[in-house]
Amino acid sequence: MPFRPIRKLNAGELREYAMKVLSGRALTVAEIKEKLRRRAAEPEDIEPILAQLKEYGALNDRRYAEHFSTTRAASGAYGSQRVLSELAKRKVAPKIAQKAVREAYQDTDETALVTAWLERKYRNQDLGELLQDPKKLASAYRRLRQAGFASGPSIRVLKRFAAEAEQLESLEEAEPSSD
Image (tube, rainbow, N blue to C red):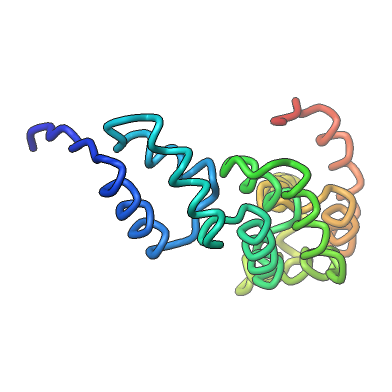
């Protein structure tokens, strides 16, 4: 398929494009700004459009972060660290992201989330038997960390199934930080 250059849009078309994109799904200010930057014939047209979208309430990073955090917390599929990381990737300001995640997870028992996550991911297996294998225990721990669960609650839950779970703390110290 041959490369087709993206048609550049004037201010009016750019505003319509922004509204169309935002009608499809919510975006952060940085995400929509990047989309507009790629399509704008004149870069100076972008800021007035962003200001107008903010004024209309169509663009609000705080509201975006709150909704994103709340839905992720309610799903139980992600720990707070993963949600913070995802918001950072979407270029939400750190203070806004931290506040939204803290509020979304404030009434959540992370130990219960970890337990539910393990039961869901290993639903057809006996966790007590499975986690006796040190490799599978380490794998489950890494998967919990990738899902954004803190090491403390993860290890506490894994200790219920395997005495060797205490050794995972040394694994955490040995691995270089990905931050």
